[in-house]
Image (cartoon, rainbow, N blue to C red; front, top):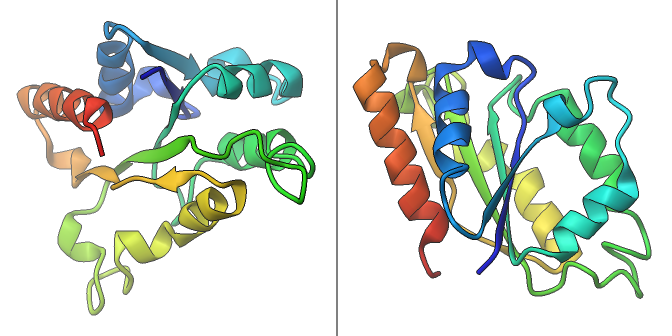
Length: 174
């Protein structure tokens, strides 16, 4: 199975977790890592290039830190311009049908902050519903989310262990 990891962090060099994940995934066979902010520092996305990447892969992974209960801005822009009507959805928009979508999310806050009655009042799964809806609309199968929470408190060894766990999660047959 060919996997495309779309890594999205506006300051990848400053992110221990997302940078470690991205670097570790680059070592995997049949995994293409695509750093959106490095590819498009001006924010101008090459739609044709992105659609070709999607077509060439079976499993799509969005890797990002949770920003204001969603993804960093460039991933939202990517969705707006790449997942077009007639290509990704609509009566003739079937290009992504049968592919899989998996999220790899990091949060600064701990897991207990993301639940009913917790600091953020909502579970992480509730906050990620728009991604599940996107998978549904585009005919992709939404896979279980990989998450690392409370990352501000992780030491280097724990971050490396999370990268190994991510590799296993991404390569797993669902």
